[in-house]
Image 1 (cartoon, rainbow, N blue to C red):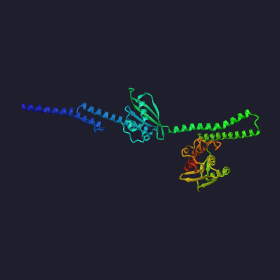
Image 2 (tube, rainbow, N blue to C red; image 1 turned 180 degrees about the vertical axis):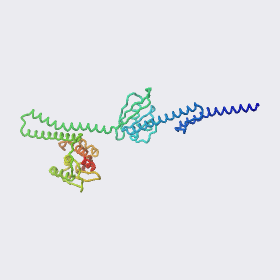
Image 3 (cartoon, rainbow, N blue to C red; image 1 turned 135 degrees about the horizontal axis):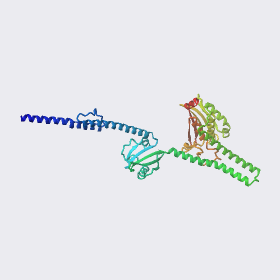
Image 4 (cartoon, helix red, strand yellow; image 1 turned 180 degrees about the horizontal axis):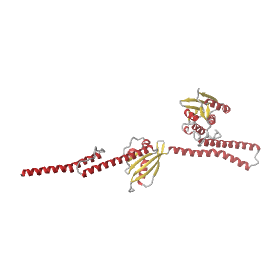
Length: 425
């Protein structure tokens, strides 16, 4: 009897243990496994947990949590992708560092600017870019509350830096953001503007001063002899014509640069155009005993262009060729096709141009030799600028090649494809 009672107790204990195990212990081990899979970023095959109601509720809550987390991760990934797209599309370079000056973020423009490979997050800035100016700008931004601006010279580029401190919700400085803006072209444009103002002031001052001086002379000495009066009037006439040329060329440039340059397009034969230009300049070429040579390739295509504007451009090129050539020299005009372009050029064997001056000869009023005065080599200093704008209006460009003592070649290059599209328009 006792043995039967003992067996019953043992059986009940085992049964109770099994029930407790299946209802309370085993489910929580399943929960632990679910949590481990979620932590690894894996989606469990099922969230159903056999056992008590509490365990089943935990499984259902874990499923909801996993779905919410997955949705949140998608939103974060989408935002990060959007930010990366924005950063990659930015023309300005971007750098973000933390309060210890370790790199948090850079964009592709920054890496190209400093010729860097992929920059690892957490790398100290000084290990990425060793530049005293950048280091000082970041330090000033981290120390202050206002944006910091500076300029950085990098190879042949001028870079404007703008740095600002980043803060958390408590207002504590957590790092700095730096933008790098390339202002090289702005600097060049500003220099061109200053040179233009200085040069036009110089170009206008000389004839105006002479005119004013002679007017004062005539007012103070009304008894001036007829011969002297005739000489004075001839000088005044010459300088008034110079003023008129400057104003006319400035108006031409203004019209060429305007939104509506009023091109009168038509079919132009390049060979015939150059022959007509030479015919118009026969007298001036003969006065300086200059030889003229025309080199025309056969079967040149007709181009769609403004004949008057192209003539004006080549008049300016011939004018320069005549002025800067020695007596008895040679001027050569050529026209040839190279691939999808038409190349029209004017060459001389005159005094030539310094290599340092060559990139700037198409600027307004730029003079290769500052020692030359208008009396020695007359002109407005606007001819090559007009040539450049005429070429650009026709979808082309200009090129210059020169060597001191050996002469200069100026090329006007017009793309055939663009010429055809102008015809269709």
